[in-house]
Image (tube, rainbow, N blue to C red; front, side, top):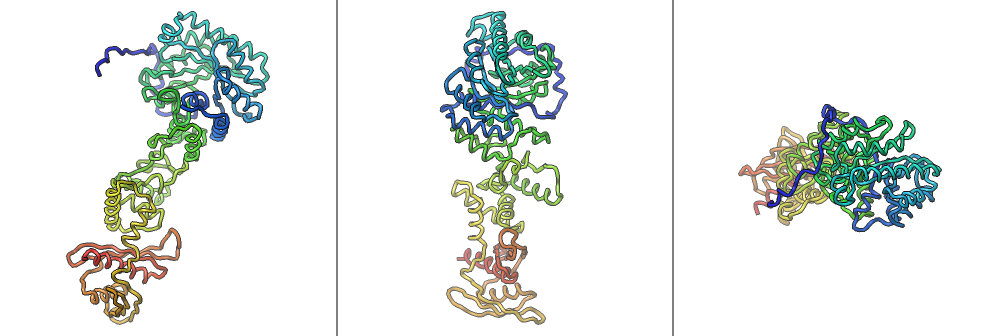
Length: 555
């Protein structure tokens, strides 16, 4: 980078901030939330939402639990104005929800704003003007006094128009580009507006401190927020609000540290859509609190549905790795991660844990509508036996022996590697069945009859190499006797090394599953799985499947 010398720091550290916020370690209660998806988020879209799409989005925000929703800038365009009127005239705003509208400090805009709010029961009129050094000098070419005059004249006009409004109107003021404003001047201009509006306990004023452009590290912003909280007039009757953008990728950190520093309210968007790099992602903020045992007071329990509606009406995609909401954020492809998650889930079941502490999963994916098999354990060439075994067990009911999991794991990874793709659970199950399940060629056992003596005798009717025959032999158990009969007939030596069984817990509970490992004469291991309502038949099926795997490899 050749031109670094042309850049300089454009922020102003708050001198004398007490930094008491650094003593806190977590946010202990939900802030007031205000969604700005329908204004800040909408104006950042390549194709802005239609009226019908805005109405659908508004309804979703209400269902999620937002009590304050910024709906637009009604004086800016007929589309914005019509949306505001549609909500009001069709009684679409619940009594416990307050809509918020934006206005500049110009009388005809303020007049149009109040006209748009005619008949509204609860609204916030959000007044703003730019205060940063860059804006003052380059855009408006005004000194500090002239900038204060703009804010104060707007505040006076808002108060004047509120006198004739039937309904509850609250006021909000933003020193736009707060992060590029000297903290002392930000205090001065905010106090001038506060002195006009004279907030009371029943009529609090919102002072919004927007990170219009992110210019500093998050702790610098937190100090600025704390400084404002300590120097604003009538603080007890103010609601300190934050509106972080994400130019430096720190919007969540700005918000969390700002809340620790004394802020009461957050303005942001679902999934962080907004101008340039976006606004703060409210979903991430809320679920960060949730993961620490703090109720965010928003219902995000059906993330797939929220994501679907958002993507459909905004034409924006939710990034696959976006915290909490992305399709892959819970997905573990790594074998060691999968193994840890599977063992963590088993630990929870064994210990009946009431607190969540599963490795690699900061929250329970099912709390936000995700599914373990589809969203957590994902299988590709990087996966391990733990994840593959977890899918077979939880989705299909097959609890493979440890050594068999390892053998099958290598097979699945090899197939994924050659196909250069992820394998879905049903594909994995099909591989499992093709590899181990009730394999009947080249050997098939048609019948087996047993005689009890010092040893168990078995007479087996089988098909081999296209011929049907009968073989008899004995062993120290039924399966061993059948094995001896098969081995003597096909003239191939092997020994049973491992046998296990369990009931099939997914699907028909009346079926038994058996797993058999045999060792060929050279010591090589082969596995088979058998399923049947009869446990003897199930075990014989598993043995025959293992034998057939051995014979197929010999060919």
